[in-house]
Length: 634
Image 1 (cartoon, one colour):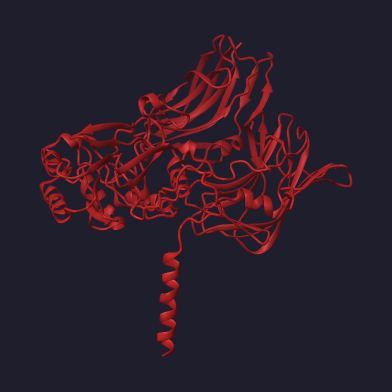
Image 2 (cartoon, helix red, strand yellow; image 1 turned 135 degrees about the horizontal axis):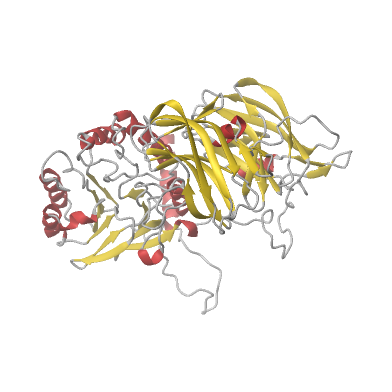
């Protein structure tokens, strides 16, 4: 009896809730301060996002940002049009493990999606078998199946809308001629349409728009034109809308894929802009009674709600309207001897430690590894007139580091954003809280400072925690913990007044990063990476180089199977305009060999850089350099 009474009460409550109107107001006048009451609240309407191509000479960092921006749009789910990994692009890396590494990285990004994320096959996800890649289609399909299951094409229905996800690489195996859509897949797709005759709309997702004019898709269109449908594709890395059979067909642009413009600083072709249809975007699709409404939203146009706060704004109009009033992110005080001091607050740490970088709780910041070269949080130190001063960083740390290392780094900056060096204590594995302290000298070129809490090459099982982080000016001649010159080689005059630069191991260790090579006992080894270029570089700082001559000498040895290596001098005009790269090339030589070359510098040369540069070298090739010297020729 009690159970029946409770059930009856629930039914009564449900009835009241069902009768409750969605919109109530207290306006009694005939005229209303709104236009109409036809709210767009149809329960059958829904929205989803489409994130386009990431791969094909990926411009790093954009794809994970696209997922972050998609989360801000709150779609019900996310679709794709393929090419989310690079796939089998290098003859020396056709193994399953290489592919698994790419999928592991992709999965770490898609795991941040707050909505379900649907994959579609592209020609980088499942590759085409071709000369030099005899099992590309089979190997990449096998790794796809490890991550996404055995269905490389599939369909689903959501709110009476049919979604069909095609695999336009299903015929990219050893058959001749290769085709996009196999007869087996065509028969399946026609059967899906037959089994779903009464859906209100049909959406097709595939990678290759070129397949639209192949026999299989033309045959499928004969069934599609009997219903309402829309097609989405990718591949071209530029956006175009077509009309076929009085229906909309969309080719989406990119979310990190390369463009057709000149190469950027990362060596990847840049996007040429809106007039070429080349831009990073999300297609936001709303299904209405009249069909899909597609809105293309540029990634740069999606901003978080705290894009500007009182703490960050430079516009002081209106003053601080927060209640309680804003706390200072990091209070700056004066020490007893008149120096500068900054105690880092939890408020500041919560401001700068983003999702995916770490967490902040009870005054403790935890930075996590992400299986990449670097993962960091950073903030400005705002030390007044830092040039020529000394700064001490102190903190308590503990960590669990399986791989890589963690650094509490002070970044010294010249001008707007030119890095002079990263200095500060490294942290190794320590389960108990440990105090660290280090004094860093700031040379005369230092204009600004930043703090980096930086995970270096740490895997995703590693972490470091920091608390009680303090920066303070050192005024009383404290012992300096860092060499004064960490980012510049030793420069000296020789007898005739010329300039000479002998490159020390300290500089080489500073510039040769992981993945580029190693430095040991004064020898720099640069390795190939199966890409166009892999390099280490540093400024030469030759005074007034225009019209002079410079000689580069070194001892080299190498094992080069493919490509070549260059000891290059980059001549620069103005801030960063390249005039040329000159210097000796190195071929395979198992014994140490001395190389020397004189490079004339024309009247336009304002600055010089040295590049230790692997050009088109595979990952089995390397070149070693020692006793590297640059000197003016008089």
